[in-house]
Length: 294
Image (tube, rainbow, N blue to C red; front, side, top):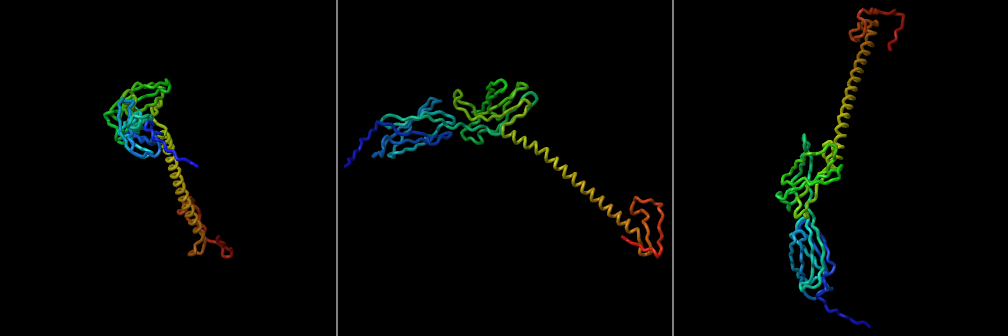
């Protein structure tokens, strides 16, 4: 035996399993389930978004009969903090959650140029890759002194460079550049950080590896080139000496016998270059003495 019981829907219950599916710089996708399974009619939800930084509120209405509801909250600010409340339109019990949007990216290509009594920080404009960034917002620069273990705020600028003076000898610094923080430092961009050593060379972790590889290559390549050139010259010298010796030997061998005269003679030394000009010439041999030519 069994019995079927149908529960009376309670519209005073809160939405269930409210959570964030995806969060971007200017939007957030949230998801929840109806207060009870299989609603038999459209349900009206009120989605309240409270900006915890600006202290403002916005309310959106969502009407659906689905048991699972997915909704995208738009027009948010990068790096913002929000409190989202979802409840039925009859002001029933609520479900809530907090959302932090993705901050603006860090500026690219942060570099240091060393001058006589100061340094210059350079970076690419953040507006090149962030459509939500306006140059009028500007950038702010921070400096960390590792020897003093202290971080200092150097200032802000709307340009893509910044001058830093009064650096102490023997100190190592870390500089960071980010989109200027808004509303008492609560909405900031991601910082780009660069190390600056006491010798006045700025480098980050990736740039240092590339620089070391480049330095090694700059040394090894010329050395290998000089070795190849030296070996080539050595082979040419050996080849020329071999040809000279071969020509000298041929001249020396040909000077021992003359088929036209029928007698063995020696060269006068002009072909060899090393013989004595006054060396006597051998005119011939006896007919009864056999002559062997090697």
